[in-house]
Length: 320
Image 1 (cartoon, rainbow, N blue to C red):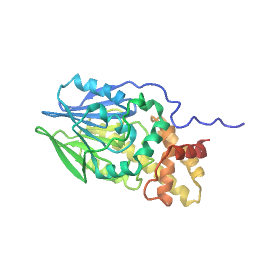
Image 2: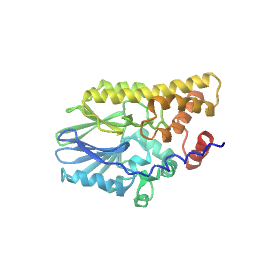
Image 3: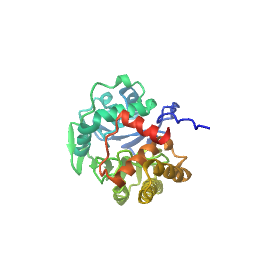
């Protein structure tokens, strides 16, 4: 009997998620939605900074509505933790004075922004509600930095840091050193499957160790609930590190045994399902994650560009 083909990526995911707006301090808030992409908000003396924008301007309006419930200060800054469309295409709604990203993120937008936009919208339609509201073109940074920069919101310092490669080569975290609160982007997830289609598996664990060295007392992950105690922060870091290390080890073992991508995927999916299968978007992420890891372990040090066509071809090969 022929097995039914899985519906491509997350086309079957149509259920809206419950949004939470969590206060971490007088200056820091987390906009989370049961494993959908999170947005961070920092309120300074004279301005507001938004970290990751939601996927469309219409979706960003709900973030803005919640910001306006707690402050009337202008939203001057948008920070892109990385370049993925689901994180950046809502930026125009905030009408910021500046859009800030790492130089590595800027380079990725130049290299693959258009392809990534088409790929992501095709994978996960629910996350791009009212996609027609996205302006033509891409979200471009107006300021870039390398390594580290500080933005002062009056007397409140926000440090934007590149602590290493992981989810992408351009990953940026936002750090409030005075309050020890960190916004990690997709470098850290909590009870949500890391998407690793553009990842650096060999580097990611060290980057997580670099985050841990800051000793955050609270952390807003890329997906999942805000982590509001040092204990929950440690749990989020450990879970993400474990997922990346387990998947990397399984793929390396399969390659060493001479197995092809299809066999490595089946073995790795079965292994990971037992431990992580209950995490949000597990089925969606695994084909992309294993394919990228297989590439890294075999012959592609840097991630290949995902296109809508490559997405479909990969899905058919692994899940068809």
